[in-house]
Image (cartoon, rainbow, N blue to C red; front, side, top):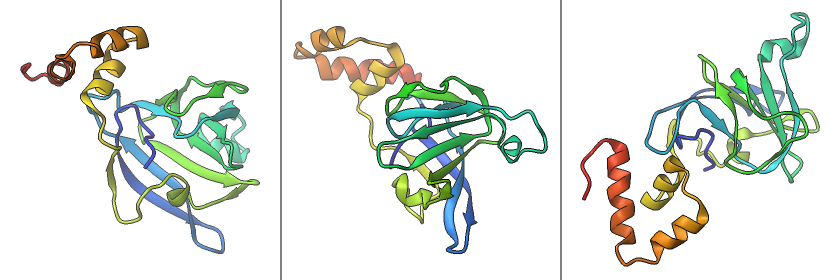
Length: 184
């Protein structure tokens, strides 16, 4: 399962089925808070290039209904469109890495569409989302990864800390402090 929010926790609130094949092509998510990051930051589940990042002001346009949106083209020919964003960070032509913040979610969550050649494809399959689960927490993130992300620790400092025998205890202690609990 690929993370869609910096918090690594989110709820699938609606699946819109489209087309003759009743494809679950449009998914609507809301983020949930966690110590990993903000529930408002939308991150890209794939690496790729931003092919669209805009808001269509013309109310007669189909794109106007999407609100502000960002479309990322991955290497497998599938484009992922994130619509309903309150703020777009990614701009057209930007190279996006998996896990990079592309925008901030609006009041009603973010809508995710998966498209191939302009047609909806099964977003559940493409994003590795189980069909029977509605609340998600991405793969277990280690204490070390949580602290590095939350504190912005660079690779050289991380490597230096990991040289010490107490490194696992240090990571665990700092992660608990970030949660608001007591250290070890």
